[in-house]
Length: 349
Image (cartoon, rainbow, N blue to C red; front, side, top):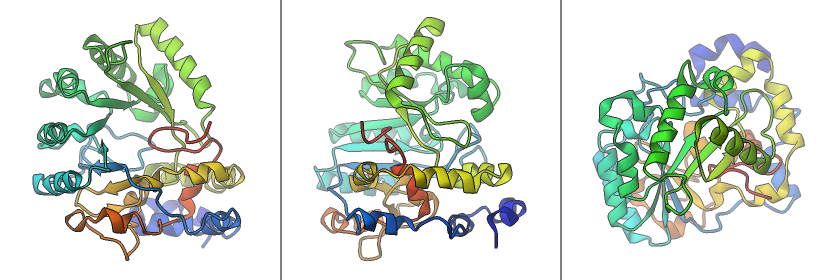
């Protein structure tokens, strides 16, 4: 079945299986595994996990146009405290896992979120929280988040599609830019992003259309100049992330007729150096229900780690996981295009 004939079915069939079917339609694109084999990178193996990325739920106060998680206010998938404790137990047993990257949805909407962050602090782990910014203003109970993050020295990573309202609101919703600016100013007020504070505030940029991000260093300089001049905002780093053809972004590609051309862009921009540095080589992803994945994107496609490895956090065995083969599919081209893409931005300079 041609990709274009699937557009009308998307809303009825927008699940992980359907997304994989779409990704596998284009026979004109070489299999990603074959591309790795050409560069002696197959099987793709971990270099040793140092990051545990934990999705604590898909509930969010926003419904962003390109969200690969398909998060929103109506999602009810939430990690329980019991599953969080299993994560803490695994982290305590494995000092090699020095970084915990907490994602959502809006992770702050999980009722046990603050408890989890406090327990991570007791373990001495470097904690990253992926905050959408507007959650800080969504309800009075969230207004003290900047101070909470400061007390526990959390690294805050926040998405800001652009330094102007028009493009930000087009991707994330009406009024999001104004609220994001206010939240960034609140974070600055407690020291985040300010020189010498030791409090890290990073921003995430992803393109608003069917194209690859520009050079990260160039964009970072422009973001810093414009946000400082216009709003007095300081931040540390800008991470450029390539949109992967998953969930709402896949829907956009199909509806706009850009799927095949966008996939061709990703294939043409394949970079073996970026492929050698993909985040799945040093990261293990934990779903809201405790199942294990090679990355956050595989998690959204329900592609669990290889069957030879532990499947759930309750059975976590880092040695076995570090020897698994990473599960691949066509969406992996997104992380290996150009300068590469990861949750920490580009992977090669």
